[in-house]
Each structure stands twice: as structure tokens, then as C-alpha cells.
Image (cartoon, rainbow, N blue to C red; front, side):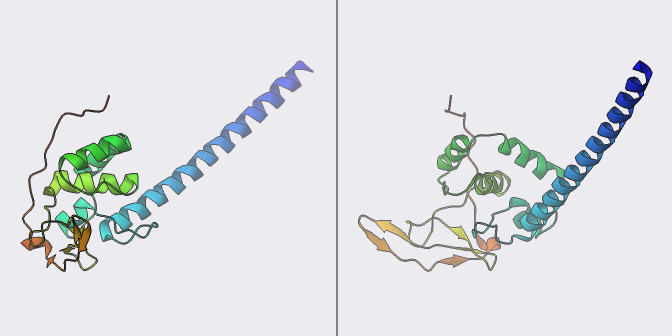
Length: 172
């Protein structure tokens, strides 16, 4: 009787292990597929599910090529940071601080790789934003209480970026 229980337990354990391995492989495959889709979206610069254009440093720097190991490591280290820390780094460089965590990571990575986006040289009020045609544009900004519209546009290769400021983190 005890031998039959041992055999049944061993069989059940073996079946459970095989099922667990199969489930892990299935989940790993889904994760890899999702990561590949995310990398493709990031590399092509297409809009994210939130409708906002993703600013991807590697896509801008290499004309849409795949993200290399250095960029992956940079994004992984930025991904470990909390949203307030990412926003602090963006504020230190006078960048836009709104958006999801992935958008903040994209902005910080782009700034570290290519330099910070300057304020609009035409109106001095607006912050440059990535345009769907590949360059940058200024939507304008508030001067006192009035909104001033600005139609400034610049191609990526014509824009002179400001060096990224690396400072100590003030968040405890």
C-alpha cells in the first residue's frame, strides 16, 4: 500500500513539474513576444496605446534601428527609478514632466543620449515637442495670463541640443 502511494505521489509530482515547466515556457513566450512588440513600437516611433508619441532616443539617434545593449541597460536602470526621481531629472533639465512612466523614461534616455531639448528659440515660452513628421515643433506658451501661439518648426538635424545636466538626487 505504501509503495503504491509513493509511486502515485512520484507520478503526480512529475506531472506537476512538467505542467509547471510548460506554463513557465508559455508565459516566457508571451513576455518575449510583448517585449519584441514594444521594441518594434519603440524603434519605429509609432504612437503608444495612450495616443502620445513615444520619444525614443535610439530611434532618433540611429534612424529607427533596433535598441542596442547600451540603450537597454540605460532603460533598465531608469526603469528601476521611481516616477518622482525621473521627474526631478527632467525638471533639472527644464523638460516636460507629464506623462506615463514609460514616457518619462523615454524622455530621460533621449536627454542622456542626445542632450536636453531647448526652449523654443522663436517665442522663448514653449517647450519643443516631437512632431510626427520627425522634427520638433513649439505649441506656444503662457506669457503672464495670455496664451501665445507659436508655429516654430525645426528638423532634427538642425536643432542644437543643450548638454544634459547630471545632478545628485535630492529625493530621500
